[in-house]
Image (cartoon, rainbow over all chains, first blue to last red; front, side, top):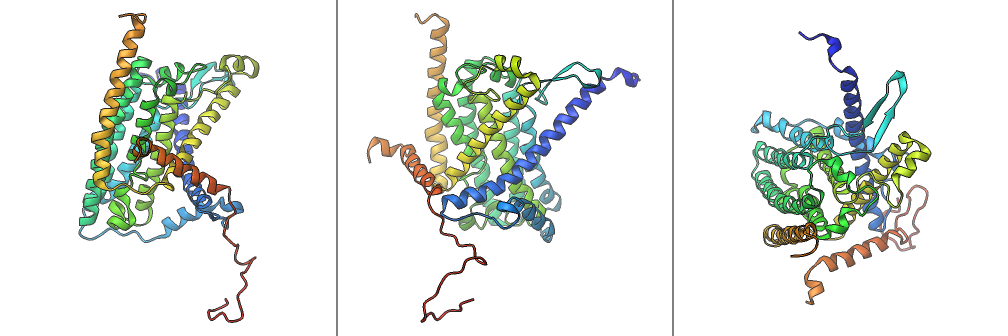
Length: 360
Length: 48
């Protein structure tokens, strides 16, 4: 039995603090995203949003959460009780697991208590960062399918089938458009991708079509209008979360908002420079204000980019109507996959030419 | 439809511009307990 002093306790403590803070920040942001959604929807529809629960309605998400806790917990008698409870948990789990590999900021120089450590604001900097994100997103189908099946309700099952087919058919163009990006970065590690964009041109300028395809697929993965047929209220009786009440429904809705937040963070990291502050050379700023303040500013710039993406998600939701199921499938298989393949081939040709010195 | 319209992306962009303009227009809500609406003399509904 190795002695307790042989384990690097400080490392474990550092990761534990990072995990707890990132999970709680994601939950708080998802909570206020519900408030932002209602406010943004309201101003786009010529009305004011919730403004009674606290100044400017700031305490509205707390009121919503309290309402969901107070409702009656219904588990239908003929449902599969174990799976019924596991469904929302799977959705929430896969939504939060992706946040482990996103770099949330630069490095902090921790000098209290006599330590001299450089702490990077990323929970796990694994070598296969992007592949891990894909694996977790693919697992997200389970939450939807289990919820639809366990409800023992034909409408929920149809909605879950539609949802699952939508998610898996939009994962393909997402992956292929990322191959174009990987040809430029040369590595799957998230910190390398951000480091390749620090203070130079962002990858969105090298891969505009790839970014566009990734954006459309992110809309489809989050079940967000125009792709929200699985949870359509007037078409399919509220979709696969029809039989859920109280906090289990709260988990499903919350998992959708966390997915939105994480997808925005992934898009900002891969294509828009992550935590890089645009138009400012970060190295010079580090010398003038110190590394810790620089890490705070970089985290703030990432959050501003994520907030702009979340606003774009909501903006599109209140602009265009929903797709019909066959239009959705056509778009995924017959339009996006050929487009992303063409993008990949052209990118590969250009990278080959560039390495050959623009001669052939 | 012209080629630009066929892509649908252009139409979506025009729609998003219209939605953005609506953010800056005057809102139609009245805050009820503080402001009430006036009714005519011949109004047959309840005047709460």
